[in-house]
Length: 499
Image (cartoon, rainbow, N blue to C red; front, side):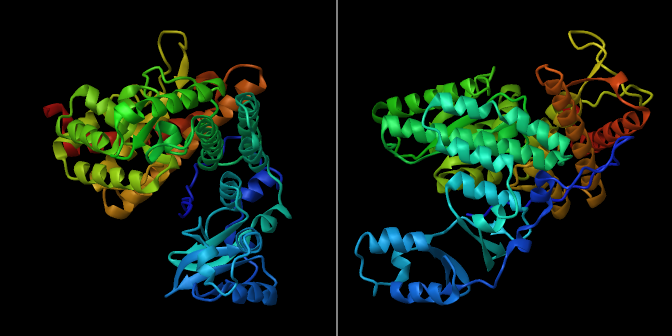
């Protein structure tokens, strides 16, 4: 189980008057790579070594954990806590293989990941040791102490607080701090990419804790299941203004007559809990509490096959939502099997892709025929720019098409663009331009939302064009032109107008 290595998106030039922030804890945790925290070469043993040998080895090297490696592959980890809880407390024979008390397939992190990712991983899963990987090779171990003795960070503190809550009221109080967290990140000049990951990590933590509390009340799940995030949560791109999109995937042993009441109650409790925490019920009811989106594996496979083979308008809309999926809790193998089937079905389906392009082209950047920025002409937000639907969503849509066409497993938009460039779906230059455009637009949106909250208003996506300097307006126009140019390329390639 490996944490994703974050891409390093390049950004457009900063707005006029921008100054570099002080060296804050927020920015240090984001920019400090895990590799800089590794203090020694990996301390490792063969899984066949005895428990006593492992304890003596740890004492000799003065470490609190040892990595179990066989044929060059990491197969487990043993900590001093394991020795205490699984050996001493159980009066276990210390001559047995150390593999008997190890944690198999431990969570790991890539050597190039930021220190923040390591801390969030530890906070979410209540672990204190994380093996560090360079590809398939283990290169070291980091502990919570390695990081926290140098850093203390509000995101990690909040994630830890969420994990300790035993009531919905406690979780609601924690959720109220997420908006302040986004404001702090904006003040620290964190990138939009990292802000999205951090804010989404809080949503994940709330979701996991709600599921744990539901299971504690309802009892163990009768069949394996996976709770899947969809939409911006799946893409790790959430901001302070988000509703919930999620679904439930269950093992094919699921029998509605026998198991239906359990999963209905669980999903209702979690979705209502998220709503109480500020992630409002999806207006389109695309949530696990909706019967249609709480199904066994075989039904989810049938859904995607139907949507891809018969790309009608409703099917295309559902594909846009549910193709962006990520497991938040539960069975990873269940999700992996579904994901592999979806990618197999979608790859090289040119007619389906042409329809998806037609959907993507419905979201146009707000430029007039003279390539000037064109604010909304009517409605509640007349004279404003919709940064989400006019800027960010078109890029998300483009990246989704590239992912479908290339059979790419990535869900995050930055990672999809990188993968699309590597697979040849888009040129390296175009991918870089889109990443920079997305970083600029998303950053502008985050700063706008932070300013709204600072002023005592609810966060939204609508920016008054007159609030922009000429410098900012020029960069915004450049970002919109990049999006429109790449939309035109896809339109030429797939010719959705002929459908």
